[in-house]
Image (cartoon, rainbow, N blue to C red; front, side, top):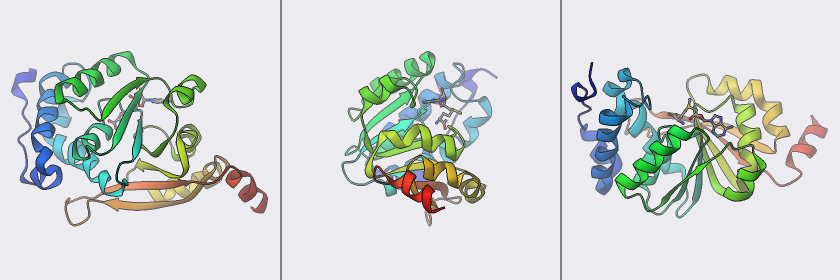
Length: 227
Ligand SMILES: C[S@@+](CC[C@H](N)C(=O)[O-])C[C@H]1O[C@@H](n2cnc3c(N)ncnc32)[C@H](O)[C@@H]1O
């Protein structure tokens, strides 16, 4: 199938979720369909579920993000969840962090094409010292399909301000993952990992998110001693 045979009609729900920003979301969807498939940013099978599984599913995360927050989307890839969140929340300062050159090119093009003044693109890996030094910290770190929770906590908690949070989009096994990786999360300084739903009462299938709070500098050590 050629790229021009794909289409992703805008569902009514998109207007409800993206509100005044739906045109930018449609632009992103069109760009993904026209150019993202041939460039391997999304698989051809994702076109039919582009809105449900990607755009809407990501955008509803914004309900958990405080006003005016600085957000780092780690492993942004084709732009999820960072781009839909930046579209729906112009008050948020969004950094799209990604190590792969061709995805960085893609993200720059997306930001330019959509005129996303609140988003910047940065190349690198979350755990690299140089990246940590240049990106600094944020109120919220988001991630989807990045890594198991324990590793994700190790990579991402240093990018979170004290009292900030990681929001990791996860599937049905989120609670099991918390149980399995609890020790690693605590050791990394993560507190109170919990499964939350975003988009309840809006999406047919709400987005499952694990929130991990960032404790103080001694959180990991003191809790480990008590365990
Ligand atoms: C499976 S893709 C998911 C992309 C996007 N978040 C999504 O859900 O569509 C994982 C992404 O994380 C990036 N990645 C892998 N390790 C990383 C690291 N240590 N720091 C930042 N990004 C990383 C990869 O290059 C890739 O783009």
